Length: 298
Image: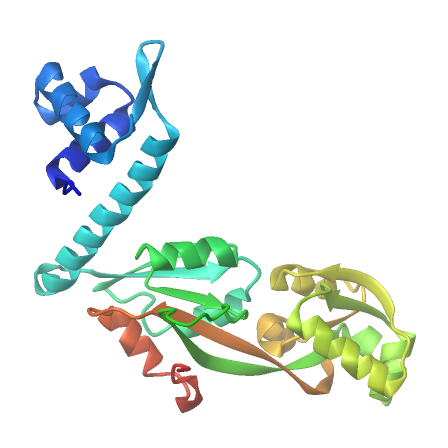
């Protein structure tokens, strides 16, 4: 099988980005004919057309889109390697963090606080779905993914899952709604509740507790976003089933109060990384500050 010429791949990426041979050739300081010849050579190597002409421009074929995805991954890996091995020459080091879109912002800040504000560190934050974040981690676009959902593990997977914190879960609401002196079963039966969405591990654990107590809850609202659960509690929609860390500021100010801890229920916070020969030293620094129970799972 013919080997791909990385120079040709870089030229292909330039054309795909620009959308025209003329513009890409101008940016690369090449003649249009020379650039066209090298793109055709790459297409011959891969055995597929990478572009089709549409009007005055070029659009990627299906094979071209696949080739561009791989080209981007190859060059990101190259840039990542260069940055890591020449780290001593950089004035600021970068940590790229992905966080599940529904994850508590307070937890994220608690984890990142040792680095935030340091003159020699740039923290890049990205919020997305679990699937998107894991793809970015695999492509070396991220150094770590913060989540409360453990990724599926298959033989040969290169994920490392670090349990960095575990928080209790409580019934939390406004002082007037919480009152005093009521048992957990009474609160669950008498007050409207703001619950995590069905299908989440937290909701499953809560449903098991309710069944055990024989309570019949009044569900006022459901949300899979911790920030939305927090807002619903602040608006006095009902008692929220939520880790206290999510509403830490409201608890400190007295806007919300913790009614009761929910026995046997906790929320695990995870940092997912991938096995790398040159791991980000900033990440290693953060993980060393977590509880020993946060050691990576095998």
